[in-house]
Length: 165
Image (cartoon, helix red, strand yellow):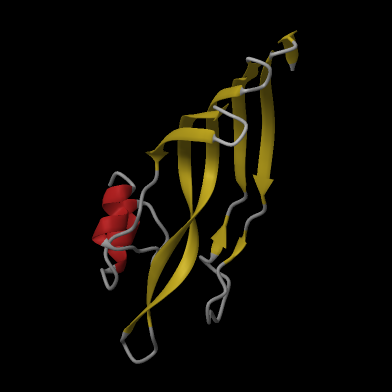
């Protein structure tokens, strides 16, 4: 943090985050193929905070970038039941790499002693740089293998499109 003047402060930050891995446990019989990895993120942020005209106008601006590795994503997973039916349940899988960046701007103006006007704007953009989803529920095991995902790691057409498959 650096104070440029009484009315202007600039800052930058860097941090690392971690979310532990685990097992999908929705009515499973064994843990084989149910493991998901820990999620890691490196987060960067820069910005300014300022006050003008005797604190009657406050302006703040920041930009950020988050770089995820193995981000944990909720998906629908399909697996065959003992009766040959396909059972679909919720689960967690790891996206290989996810990048998120954006900016935020807010302004607060005290126009008079009884009138205050505020405005804010936020922009965020996220990209799956690497995220392979499995085929549709009920697909043959060979199709999961060809996608390089564990058997049953499935999702809807919409989720696969959002993941860039």
